[in-house]
Length: 262
Length: 265
Image (cartoon, rainbow over all chains, first blue to last red; front, side):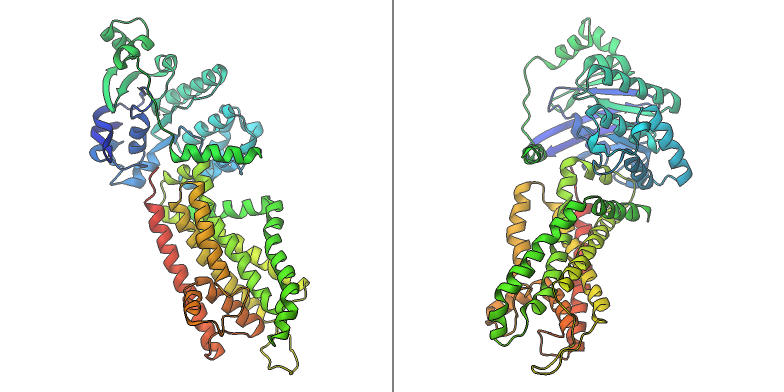
C-alpha cells in the first residue's frame, strides 16, 4: 500500500531523512517511532505531498504523489501533529467542508458524517463551534474527518499528544475498529511505546534520519534482548536527550496565545 | 467547483457570524469621514474645492474595501497558525480552486463592507451628484450608485488577491506588521482617498499613480461626484480606471495562485 525507496530530505546543510526505504502492506497498522528530531514528521510530510523529497521514490496505492498528486491525495487521510480544524465553524461544517473537498456526493456525505460523528461520540455536539471543544474532542473530530472520504491510508502524526489516558484508550479503540471494518491502512507516529505495542502490527524505529530497526514488537524485543518495547527503543536509539528548536509556527502560536489572554 | 464554493462560503459565513467585527471595522472609516470631513471641511471649502464630505465619501468607501479585502487575504496567516491551512493544502483539488474560493470570499465580504460604508456616508449627508460648474445647481445622481458598486467589487477583488498573495508568503506576526506599515498604509495614504491628486509635485504624482488604489478611488469619485483626476474625457477616464483594475485583478489573482501552489509546510 505504501512503498518508499531511498527517500532523502536535506535542508541546506542538514539531512533530516537519510535514504530510508520501507513498505507497508494493505490493512496494516504501521508505527513510526523515534526521538524528537528523528525525521518522523518530515517523512510524513513527504508522504502526504506537503514537502518535496530531495531524492527517492514514494508509491501510495500505486500512485507517485509527486506525479499523480490528486489521485494520491484522494487516497489518504491525515491527522496532523498540530490541530487543523476550523474553530470558527461547527463540527458538522468542518466535516462537510472536508467531504466537499474530497468530492463525496451529497448522499454519501450526509450518511457518512452521521455515522462517523456517532462513532466518535460527537453527534450531540455537531452544531457547536469547534473552538468550544476540549483537546480530546478536537482530536476525535480530526480523526473522524480523516476517515470521512474512506481513505485507503490514514496518516496519524502523534495523534494522542496531550490527551489523557481515557481519551487515548478510546481513540485507539476507534481507530482499530475502523482499521478492521474498512481495511484502512494506518501509518502512525507516537512517543508512547505502550500505544505502539498495543495497536501496531509492525514498528519502525527511526533515529537521526535513518531507520535503525523495523519489525513486529516481539521481533524488536528479541533483536535487542529486552523485555519491553520501551527498553528496546532505548537500546536502539541511546539515552541522550534531543532538543528541537522552535519553528516560526511555534513562535507565532505562542504570540497568539499571549494576545488572546490580554 | 465544489471547492471554490465551500471556501467562498467559509469566508462569507465568518463575516455574518462576527457581527462585532463587522461594526468595529466600519468604525475607523466613519471616524475618518466625520473627524476629517468636518474638521478640514471649512479649509477645503475656503480653497474653493467644495464640500469635503462629498469629496471624502468615495475615499472612505475605498478605504473600507481596501482594508477589509487585504486583511481577508492576510488572514491566511491565522489559518496557518491554527493549522486549518494544511487541511486545504492536502485536499485532492487544484490549489487554484482553494485560493480562488478564499479570494472571492474575501472580495465578497469587502464589497459588503464597502456598501455598508456607502450607506453610512449617505446618512452622514453625502449625496451622489453630477459634475457641476461652481455656482450652478447641484443635481442628485442616484443612478451612480449601481455603477459605483462595480468599482467597489473591482477594488475588493484587486486587494483580496493582493492580500492572498501576501498571505501565501508571510509566516509570522512580524511579517504581518511590516506589511501593514510598509504596504497597506502607504496604499491607503497615497491613493488620493483623502486629498485631490491634481496639482501635486511631479515626483509625488508619479508615486501616487503607481498605487493601484488610486484608480479605484478615482473611479468611485468620478462616478459618484463627477470628479475625475485625469484631463481626459470622463468616458475615457472611466474606461482607463476600469481597465487597469481588471488587469491588476487578473495579475494579482495569477500571482496569488502561483504563490499558493508553492506552499510547503
